[in-house]
Amino acid sequence: MQVPSIPYKKGLVFNRSLIILTMCLMYIVQFFLQLEALYVLLSFFVIFIFFSSLIYAKSFARFWALSFFSLGFLVNVTKGANLTNIIDGILVNLPIIALLILAPLILIPLKISNYFKSLSFFLVRLVQKPKKLFGGLTGFIFLFGPILNLGSIRLINDMIQHLNLSPKFLSRVYFIGYSTAFVWSPFLISVATATFYLDVPLLSYIPYGILFAFIQLIIGNLLFMKMTKKTSKEEQNSGIKVEGYHIKKVLELSVLTILLGITMFVIQYMTGWSMLLVVSMVSIIFPLLWSIVFKKFKAFREQFKIYKKNSVPVMNNEIILFISIGFLGNSLIGTSFSEQVQLLMLSISNFSLFLFVVFILSMMILLTFIGVHPLIIVTVLATQFDPSLILIEKEIFILIMMMGWSIATILSPVTPLNILVSGMVDERPLIVGLKWNGLYLALIFLASILYAYTIILLT
Image (cartoon, rainbow, N blue to C red):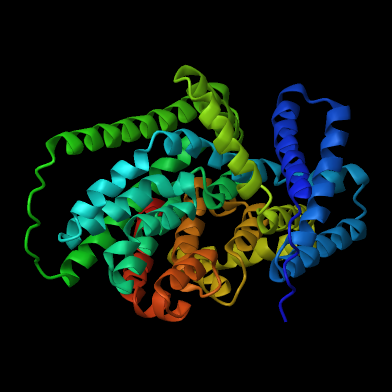
């Protein structure tokens, strides 16, 4: 039986939001100052936030978080870890948590500038051109899904829900568009977690990931085009002035998005800082600078209040899972479990690197299908196995895991993406994920194997 959610009290929401945001700021400051006193204070903040978030988290997340945390603590005690080691393990995923909490701030200038209204204008005009509409929607989610997270799907759904599009069409749009983000985006937990644990610069991984993301997008759109009959062209709209305004807004949004991405990669390249840190800092600095330069500080302040009230305090599930999974993964380093993982991977790879690729992909998909979060699988693999032992580049190992994550998040009936989409189209998760998108998943699975194995042979 599901535990009923505990209602928020206004003052409590404000205080928890403030504490969580303070924790994120302290993490950034501590990165530069490296003060022992600040480290101790930050540790208290994280531990307090973890246990307070347990109260408000969903029962499923609470159960797993407590299980992972307890197991991690038991492993640490068994192997004789000191207090510093234990605290380091609790804090290990703090950069990812900060990214998850702060990244939505980037959206504030976009909301204030009404960019999404202009996008909605063009999407409505394409309703009689399903192929172009499909391409436009999947392209939008491909570009903005990494920043908006699952909010990109909610945003698109709000834009087009009055158009009475078919549930199959919508499920394919949402899955094909959003699943691409898992293999390349530094804003999502998939790539952020794997590159963080394996200490791989994003600039060295992104080319592999984004190329395959384009392949996914192309396969999805070609498959839809093959399944769609030709339709009559939509009549031209004569509103030239209105259209010109919307074109300008969409171009502004495109340029702004590209500049933001370039800025973050340049900062990461020049400083050598973690991309998790760079994105977190840009998420704070960019909206503030934008509101000052364009004299929109009052509007920014109002949007920030909404963000603080609605977005920050509801991330309880993510906070407790990231802390507990990171703690457990860190505790397993140097144990017999780690050795067994190494031996298993070495045995498979020595037999066949092709089989190694298939094994990682299949394991990601099957374990996620039965309810194991892909974050857990990636954390275990990334912390317990060194791909250099089998002469595979770390970037390729990450790519294989990300491709498995991308497929699994559509197929599994218990992933947040599948649950969200199936709820929007009012259909069972297995029907939406497997029946309606099974052919796409099969093609992507084959493409993943060929792509990864080809890169292994070429490197």
